[in-house]
Amino acid sequence: ILEAAEKAGYRIPRLCFLKKINEIGACRMCVVDVGARSLAAACVMPVSEGMVVKTNTPQVRKARKAVLELILSNHRMDCLTCARNAPCELRQLASDLDLAKELGVEENRFEGENIHYPLDNFSPSIVRDPNKCILCRRCVAVCRNVQKIGAIGAVNRGFKTVIAPAF
Ligand code: FES
Image (cartoon, rainbow, N blue to C red; front, side, top):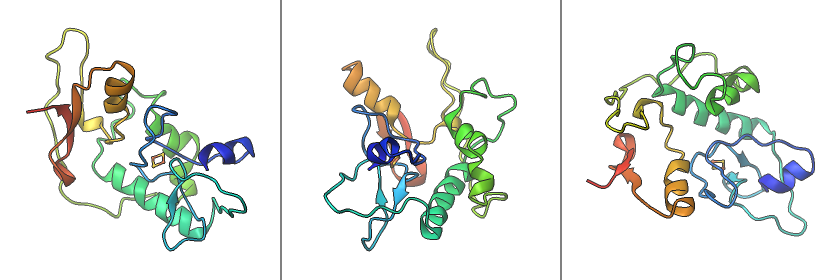
């Protein structure tokens, strides 16, 4: 659906999707209404003849807003000093595309526990800040499917999930 919509000139927001590398429907940012009981993730739902897809209904916008709010609720919002800054897709999604305003995410409804992980700078070539991770699993997919290594994956469950090597 995501690609068909794009070909037809409709941009559906997405975070975890990486064409042919990470097509797992993890983030739910791309949800659309296909007339089913629940919303469908456009990045993993195949199109079919006669299918009617609604990409911008109040229900769809509400669901995307909740997804974005949940991601931001456990995210260090230090964009101005973050090394990623301008090329950050999360920030682009929330600000450049005006999604935060468009979706009405002006304040966070989901206040609660925040997890703070130590900075991982053990490698001479890479510094990882797990606090910036949104668990899209694209790094896991690239490690497994492009590099053919499979060294990292999701460790722990639920709120404590972190991307790391096993053990
Ligand atoms: Fe579709 Fe993440 S982009 S679920």
